[in-house]
Length: 383
Ligand SMILES: Cc1cc2nc3c(=O)[nH]c(=O)nc-3n(C[C@H](O)[C@H](O)[C@H](O)COP(=O)(O)OP(=O)(O)OC[C@H]3O[C@@H](n4cnc5c(N)ncnc54)[C@H](O)[C@@H]3O)c2cc1C
Image (cartoon, rainbow, N blue to C red; front, side):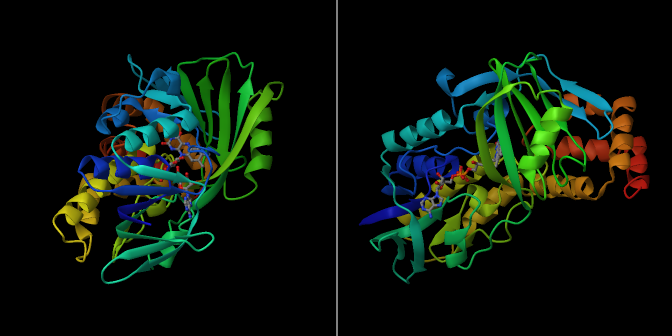
């Protein structure tokens, strides 16, 4: 088998890179290890409306489970602040349907999708790239786009780094929860979510409640559900996954291969959300690869891809990485103090005015230059 571009993985990043490349007129073949696109899913599905606009996606209503207007933040000992807007800020997606819809866009643009084929070999030759699927069949292409998600196996075969800061995560979908359908909740605390946080995301007649942690996320989630008063609710689904908090890998291209999405660590270190940031990079990937093929320049390094996506998101990842380092170092007491300072010294207004779920640097910088918030947080960093 042969195609101009061979894409490994049919998640959002693989589909968006394929869509862009196919629209430019090159042949695209997507190899997906599972028999159905979008399954098994591993996501809370919270995606900003502004991010979907940036990706130029009009998501069909059947993929949308809810719309939310803001977020409530809870410190370890229960200091809270709420960031709210008048219009809906994010949608809660049915990721299985969303992934299938994205794959159908790529398919309609001309990409060929083959399901049930797991790539387990990669090699770059001077004149072509070769991958092999389980069972040994070889597929050749001008370029491989590695959109395999967090595992990073194909990237490693190409000598590219794997994403770091990987945390195990668990999420339950609970039915029969009465509550505010307009706000998500983010709960911080080293007893139940060391290294990350717990979330409660409203969906119709229920919630998605989950957390990431350095260890034992399942056990910790059960304890958190009890603490949050949700123990009596019926569990209707459980998912597990890996959240990436270490930011983008150092290098996302090698000879005849590039990595996109989770495979490249293009995930927000603050929240672990990667659909929009990975999607932005995937669109760049599809365009750069298609142009290189059409201009006959694939033999040259695909550096333009890395230069372009870092130009769009490099600063964002830098500031979100700093915020993640702070969150990982600060004590529970320090977080309580920081949350009080945000609440009492204009922090919520900053977040409401400058907050952007994907481009967080502006709001983070403005929080940091507030002397009350900065000084109090630093003083309590290790207390
Ligand atoms: C618990 C949890 C909650 C999350 N919540 C959110 C959220 O609310 N909002 C948000 O934006 N992000 C969230 N994320 C992150 C988000 O899920 C990822 O950033 C996003 O799915 C990355 O898309 P991707 O296309 O890069 O990778 P994936 O979605 O992982 O897709 C990779 C695809 O490649 C396939 N594949 C893997 N290896 C191979 C192979 N060798 N051969 C062929 N196919 C292969 C897989 O089967 C899969 O279909 C969450 C993650 C977790 C774990």
